[in-house]
Amino acid sequence: MPTKIEKDSITGTDTTGHEWDGLKELNTPLPKWWLWTFYATIVWGIAFVIIYPSFPYWRGTSGWIAREAIVAEMAEVRAQQEPMLARLREATPAAIAADPELRAFAVAGGRVAFANNCAGCHGAGGQGAQGGYPALVDDDWIWGGSLEAIQHTIRHGIRSNESDEQRQSMMPRFGADGLLTPAQINDVTEHVLSLTNRATDAAAAGRGAEIFAEQCASCHGERGEGNREFGGPRLNDQVWLYGSSRDQIAAFIRNPRMGVMPSWQGRLDPAVINMLTVYVHALGGGE
Ligand code: HEC
Ligand code: HEC
Image (cartoon, rainbow, N blue to C red; front, side, top):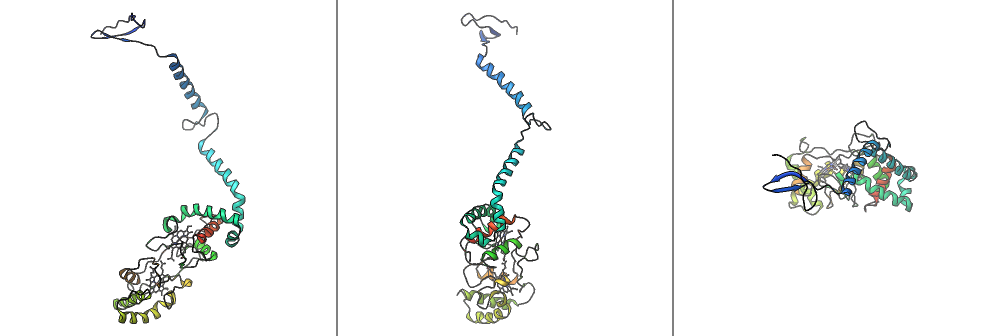
């Protein structure tokens, strides 16, 4: 199509030369302010590329790198916290708990460290989880709820095979290894149920009581009150790690599952372990 640029008689502006069925298009120039803004963004863009790191291997003339800035900022925060962390590292948990300032810092820091390292197994608020993860908010302790006991558990772990001082004890596999017959397992299950007044077969529970005294009392206590030395949980309360039903208890006796908790010594700063100790102790069940 031939193009013919002409002046529009009404606006005085050039046309583009395009014509469709008698309709012509005006070639209105861009407003000056828009053009200048546009040029300014181009200049700004070029300057940005030069000053800041914009391409691989180009660090920019300013030398400012977002990642390095964050690292420096974190180092500064850490340096600010360092005196406090040093005090928390040196002090015993008992001394921290007795000092209001240290205690407040430890509980706040312990809450964060707990969310990062422990909540996955013990629940966000330390309420525990079915399948062997004990609640840390109650006063039902497998290994002990004093500051020292809690700290020992956190440092060395439980059956973690990561520390010589780990908490260790294994319940025999009474069914899987044929130490008790199915009938005996039924009887001792009935006795365990009787500890919380749930037995339905008194004769079986009576037979089970003898088995319990021989096979179980050493780790769980004569009345099922638990034994912290062997990490044998209480069996005469409402708190169950692996389920409270008859089937769950019998299945456990047949083939027990031993919970594992990692050792945190070496993974966490001693100051953080102290903060966690005080935090867990303060959750409500501390002794
Ligand atoms: C991989 C899962 C896991 C993680 C992560 C974990 N724990 Fe545990 N924790 C366990 C298990 C399982 C037990 C119970 C072991 C047993 O049956 O004796 C336990 C037991 C404990 C106990 C002893 C409770 C008692 O009744 O005596 C304390 C205290 C404890 N954990 C604190 C912590 C803290 C603090 C952290 C974070 C630094 C943590 N745990 C992280 C699995 C875990
Ligand atoms: C060598 C010590 C030991 C002996 C002996 C032992 N247990 Fe255990 N038992 C444990 C430990 C340790 C646990 C906890 C496992 C864990 O925390 O992961 C446990 C857990 C249990 C549980 C689960 C508790 C819960 O809260 O879910 C039951 C039920 C139980 N034992 C019954 C018995 C019975 C019945 C016998 C005797 C036939 C027996 N145990 C003998 C060490 C022992």
